[in-house]
Image (cartoon, rainbow, N blue to C red; front, side):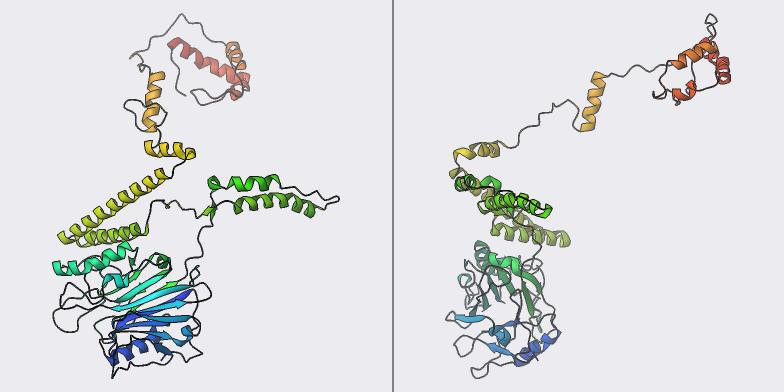
Length: 495
């Protein structure tokens, strides 16, 4: 059972858990669902039921919850809201005049979920097939609206689509009946939060295949608030599984806003800066007071600049032409590409190719639309910016060399051109002595060594000249014994 009223979970404005489930009109399924909340990680505060059990126009009650239902004899949808949530927020049910759709408008004096919104809406729907199987009882226009505040659409829509179930083979009738819903959702910027291929219905009898029928959509203001979609609750006896959507405040670890100094309102700021006066310095200041005086004026000027400068959140992923619709298309394209790579069937490859073509076509259209609007609003100050965008990045000014593309290849070409390699020297096969060369004396060796700098680099032998200058007379004499052989034979050793 849920916690007693007054001792239940205190609803936090930055966190909300919502359960959605099809009860098949069974009281046992209803009781099993609410009893399973004991095992939930977070106790749900809102439960959206489709096909709830109804007995003589009465719905079952559960301790700590209050239910709402359309004013009909047998409602097809019924949301249950915890009393502790009702005691904190204003919940207004909105009836659409039918028995299979009900909306809850939740509002508060304080911002919800750590955002600037004071209200959001939840739509609970149970769409069934009509006599014409291509038309459902709940049309797409009833579910997806262009609102300026968060909107969550959940329910059993009884539609099959490759975006929610990529492994299923679809009939033309199934595609034609589900396409209007996903097209309307994409036009309004909604995103599907069901993981592709995660079944929500497992038939209890018969040969029907598992399917994805229980869907959850969120509009752009709600997208950053959806924390998770999971099916972690135990089975209730229904052929549908309970779905849990968790809403939470956006991450607080976002990058701080960055001033856009190029857009500073200098016309308004210039007279203010001209009238700014630096206060007089303290007469007998202490080090802390002097430091405070020196910091006060710059801080005041910086505050004035920031006050008249717009800010933006820095991100290298930001693109001025990006739209929420592209986000949905990118997500669906990646889903289809992963499914095609994993299962590698002709149908999956066809779906991935179609998603890819639609995604990149939408990107091109968004860029063209943004470029057209940019040119229409262009001023004389940004004409050169438009020219730079139109002609692209300037060509590199470093000269291009034939046969050289990488820096290493270019370096080799330049060295070979300005410093051509010499022909390799090949020593003669036999050495002939030069008997006419006079022998070297110790004095000549000492005189030659004395002219060398003690800090010069070593020669081919690897030894510096400092040891030679400091060598003793005996060392020089020993050197004079083999140095004449080098001169007479016209060759020196490598070391």
